[in-house]
Length: 323
Ligand code: ASP
Image (cartoon, rainbow, N blue to C red; front, side, top):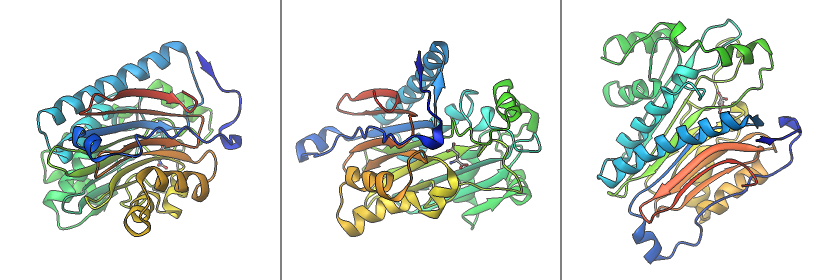
């Protein structure tokens, strides 16, 4: 059991940045696919049983991604399928395990981006969509728009065969307890996935219930292309988690890509810069994969549920910053 005594907001610990930096061409050739997932930043304490359950869930999601990619699946299909699985898992704040709003309902957000075409789709404030990332993909592929909200997004969903549920499907006892604590700071569990596929294409996906006790139609970074999600074959794919307002303010996902594109930074350097000098300690974390297959999962919180794998045999599952 791991127990951090300090409060999230006062943590000044920068998470270990665990990248495979310094890629030689030979090493890059070994990595003809690469994947990284996250299940949210801001984790502070877990019982031994909870920790085991999270590690198991991440392993199942990572293994699905590994199998798909080894079989030649596209980056886009892979990020959607892996995020679907995490959305169906009540441990995470996305889909089934979505947090409660201040009105004791659930409003879900998601976004997806195809780095090979720059096509993207996003939805916010939906209440009946079992797998929000799949509706985001439908917005991308079947509407002429990029970002749909609330009732409009639900009406668009009516024109598709996306799976619908009652809002109460998202009710879970652990999220109700979090609401009752009225902390509004429980940021655990947003999910995301970034992938480089065998064809050399990148994709990113992020899905969340948002922040516990959110009010007034609040929208975080997760459904915002450029803030909580971004992918471009010319640099990298990024999915973020944490205090959404900060990630919107600093357009974090796009900033990582822009530093690589315009500043010539490596993925690791770009991520370090954002987490150490742009964001504040305790804000959250992100996962990213470069066009060369470098993988970075890093955070400035005590922990972030994260896992990564690639074709060279890398397979890693981590929760705490100091492991
Ligand atoms: N970034 C999400 C939001 O602000 C929350 C999270 O990542 O846990 O809605």
